[in-house]
Image (cartoon, rainbow, N blue to C red; front, side):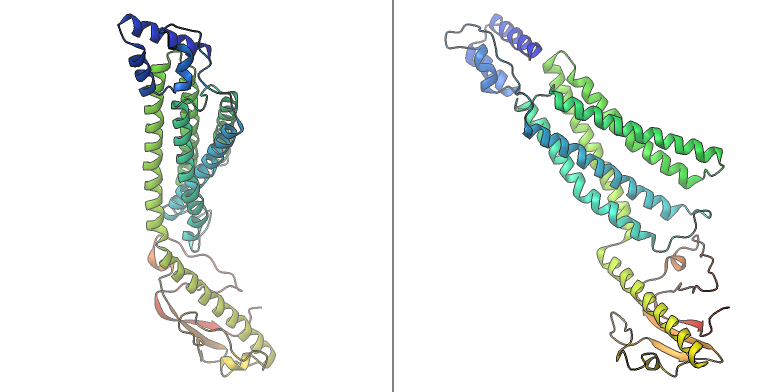
Length: 361
């Protein structure tokens, strides 16, 4: 570009005035990030200055691909990071109006998986783009770069504005609480960081003095990447602490399977009682010859325990691997169960639920 050519010529003239040879000048330019193709038109074998060519290529399909990929992965990373922080907020700040969340750890899985995949890709693409710019393989002033950057600024600004509108609306409706305020701040911080970073990037691209801009730009992008990594690690560590390891998630899934099996048995027992006006002597009576084997524990491979009580009362027992969240955290309020619902809250280990074979009227 014209400004770059003028700066290159000015530097060569200044270096020649200081007594530097052509080879010394060429070596200095190569070390500062210029390529041989960019500086060749300005230095010839006769040691004379000639008009230089533009130092940066035009935007290509390759640039468009990497810029689109960078903004796409940035969006996924921002949404994933917000989802992780939201789940952390839900875990530590109860909301009596929103109600009780069973197995809130499951809310971590989608944002955590999205962030774990998109964030490294975003960092790599940004690093590669900056590396190509410093080597002269990509133009920092390209039109596609500016257009996509302004699109990212627009989307981030629209998100922040919508967030503020939601805050004002809920404030006027009297529905503002700690959980809501923290979530609003999360969106403002993530959106604000994106706006600030790309706005500063645009300003750096518009600087006249190339050498200073390149040095400051490199430090600025490194600071952004470092801050991104620190925040990402903090969110991931917090997420894994709350959600637990994959092994713990498997325990949660197996316990949920046990609850589902018990609920199915409970429904079948109520159907049997409504039909026979008595409880079945054993769970085998529920099969009626159609199913040779009823639900079995996913780990033990044995049928669940069933004990007949007085009247229509009976018990179903299972061995659970982990405590229910209500048992672990006394600050979590139990949900209000309707007449057709069963409280399946349980501790770890063998636990029996006392149920009724009659359906409520």
